Image (cartoon, rainbow, N blue to C red):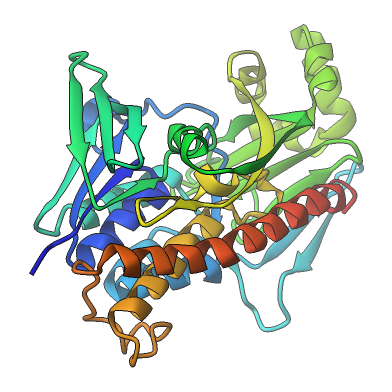
Length: 392
């Protein structure tokens, strides 16, 4: 019986989860990631300041549970639950806003540690290979072939597959190649605000603020937020118009800005952390909506490659994980039509690695039929929520 092969461009969160799913279903899996292996000790500490802390919710955890309850447990061991917002007023007052009367929470999680868990998991499957520092150079979606460049050696690496998956981020090269093969409608928009991360270190070995809340300093046209980390620090993100960033040119300007808008945060940060404003990179914020997400039975895009969003609804990663769960459900439906493919227990042992091109295409057509609509709604909610959060 033929064993299908999948090539995945991108080994980040969504790409590594996709690798786990396809390996579990019996596929030969190759993952090509542009960045170095984050688990390599030489790369620890090299993560840049553009990562924006992540919140994993039921939407994302459901996707991990479907893969493996044991992996879900590993993930839950590294999260910090946030049961609501803590609003910081100009006068230094705080006001808690619970997310749920039932005590439910969203969970702060470190992007890097989560990625490491998923990479470790995908490499437990026989027939799975992960190649780091390889960038996608060319993709022939009719021939189902791809060429990656080894960034270290400059060598071109040619590979072929039964299915090519683009999980290669907001500036997805796979999405670019998809446009050569089918009529892709794309909407991309940059917003007038950027972001910068600052670190609020632990104080005397403890959290500087309540760790069970997402902290927000809403200031109408801009805001500061803070999410807790396992090392008892907070990752703080300043979102504001580019013109506001550009108006802060000196340490005096910076101190006046914090004294006027975030006075209670100054002793929590300390001057050294505040001064990172001048050295930490600033990131642009934009969204991408596109459809279709696939070409024949040959290729499909997922995660930010399919629907990059702004971070104000905390659902970007969760939505990407849901892409993979949905795709897996639809492929299982083709492999075992008499089994409830939405039931993770019932379809635990289904293999999709011998599906025909016709069956794969049928699943991808359904995938494109639902995911662009759902992800576009999520992007719209995120845009609305930025206005709401700044005015909380």
